[in-house]
Length: 176
Figure 1: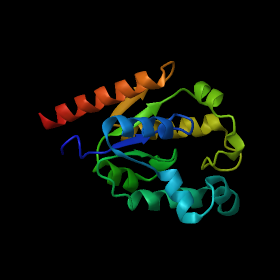
Figure 2: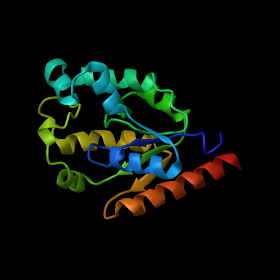
Figure 3: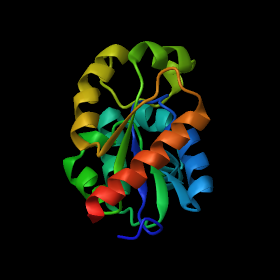
């Protein structure tokens, strides 16, 4: 696949920077941008937190899986929701559009970044701590990632450059 037609799929915990970095990457790489959390909200006409509150965390995960399976986005940067990795079928569907990039941020850094933890719309069972969610999801992010980016202590420009470089290297290796 031509790198100008392939997509870049961003995965990671809430607060990792998928939406912020995704928008900047799309601009720099001349790609369209889509945030699957926004697609869920538009489809349900509710915030993620409202879906959680009224229907539970499994309803949010199911809504996310449906949105991901309906995603056909060549030449996009796709920012997924943090719980996308719970759906094996959805992750394999996304892989056909391009490499999956895991934005790896430590739990301590994420807790500093997220100021609205209770209203963030994190798909988790009642009583599960953020650290427990992190411990449960991190192995899944690593399983699906084609590229892992260590985000701690780096500014947005450095992260963008690193992702673009890694993506080019991954494409060259796949093309060889």
